[in-house]
Image 1: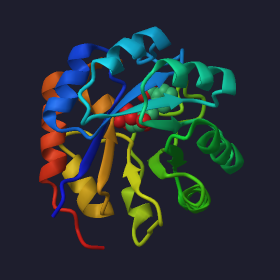
Image 2: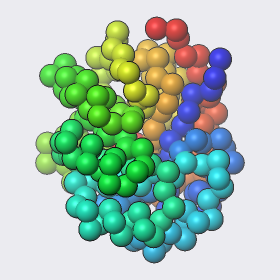
Image 3: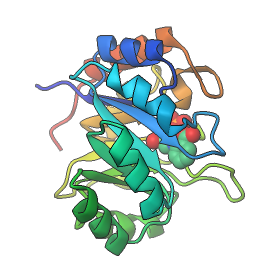
Length: 219
Ligand SMILES: O=C(O)c1ccccc1NCC(=O)[C@H](O)[C@H](O)COP(=O)(O)O
């Protein structure tokens, strides 16, 4: 059975990138959102991604970005995927895919059954969907809050596109999350940090190991 694929989000230093790749992560996430403690300037991201091993897919995370930001980002940074983590409409997702020629992953916040329809809507237009916890009201960040949602909400749900589970995952719980949801891809940020915005390399290794050891059920 294939390993669960892991995305480590919010990489900020060359060592973060090297450790994520060595540990076996499939994706590295780079955050472009000034309010985030994980925010990178484009020049910083360029340097980090240029030195990244080829096996690590480089994902730029943006929130309601306009074309000017995306133009600058895509021109300067060698990217493999764009992650849209704001209130982008399905039409905007399609527009971004067409304009930049990169796969687009759309993040959808789940807090209850009412949010599940959005997953179906976005899976029709995005290359992947990121099934994340809905941020609490008034939160500064639309993601990366270290909060989980009730994974049982995903029971029996299937989408035509690849999807990734996120929200409050840690080395301790990722195995259970995979077992319950059947996720073949998982994403983590806070759960592998020593402090907000500071990655812990031991936790990155432990997370990838735990995720890859998790038995993915045939659902
Ligand atoms: O991580 C951030 O700072 C961030 C800022 C703005 C929008 C999204 C953000 N993170 C999104 C991610 O992909 C996180 O990895 C995902 O939400 C899981 O985060 P966590 O619950 O902290 O593991």
